[in-house]
Amino acid sequence: AMAALFDPRSLVFWSSGTGFAGVFGYAWVTVLHLWLRVSFRATLVAANGMVAGWLAVYLLLLRPPRDHPQLPAYQRVPTSERFGTAGSQQGLPHLELPAVGRGEPAAGEGSPLGRDRRVGTLRTAAAATRGPLSHSSSSSSLSEARQAAKVHSMGWQRRLAVTLSLWPYTVPLATVYAAEYSMQSGVWTAIGFPVTDAAARTRFYDYSNWCYQAGVFVSRSSPMLLPQATRRVLWAMPALQCLLLAGFLVVGIHHWPLYSMGLLLPAFVVGLMGGAVYVGAFTLISAEVEGPLREFALAAASVADSVGIAVADVVGILIQGCIFRVNGLPGADYKCGATSAR
Image 1: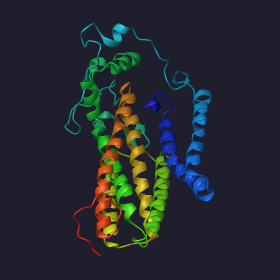
Image 2 (image 1 turned 30 degrees about the vertical axis):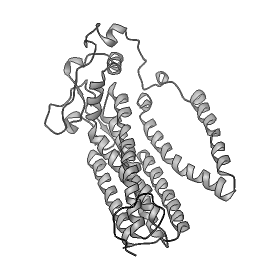
Image 3 (image 1 turned 90 degrees about the horizontal axis):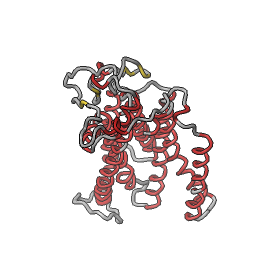
Image 4 (image 1 turned 135 degrees about the horizontal axis):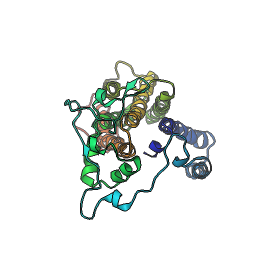
């Protein structure tokens, strides 16, 4: 959410960095713990040294938002204008929350979805996208500072309404996370060559996650080189991710049509889809939601990936138990009712 206060490219850099964190994390453990035989505890403690590095970056290199040449200076807003008169909602902006696709009038010049412009290949005009957030025309004359203060003073009902109106971005984000983490915590733990060898299953799990993290890093860095995704593409990628989940389920149960290290390629594609939806959703929000609501929308939408992960935590346990039983493997805490194939 804080990226909304900086250069628009900072959101892409943030996404790319989070993608690289996965690759770096696996490499850190592999090099120190597996190759150099450093104890696992020492490996984790040594990683804490990076905290000092990030603190130095924050204190010494990061410029405050107010110093950025593309951003207006902050203005102090009187308390009476921030919160309105005592006991009233006079100070709050009137935020209309029309449902997407029902033909509501396009947002005006002062709306959060804003003005006709192009960001990459995406037309972000409210008339074209019918985005989920818009101001009434009466608030368009308020200053940016006053609007920001009023957004911060919204009650929980209004905040919830705005958060729910972000569903065109949050539903794909939650879905893609649920599918990919179900593969990681469920299916990939039950694949090995041969599957009865615990060491082989661990080996595939490690390599598949390496490939997944590499795909995440590539796709989260892609907006620096490729045009911005459209909403249609944003919704298509979670559908493909669910198909990949179904494919891995078939492979895990029937060992068909491919049962070898060649499965690392679709694992890489899983990472591509997950990273692309992540950066695509947040860059679309940053492009389509203008004004003071942008920062709030970015923060609110970030809950979606956590929801997807929570769903996958449950689904992954069910998947692992069923595939373990089908393959006659011990060790799963959950035993499903599938009939053993062996």
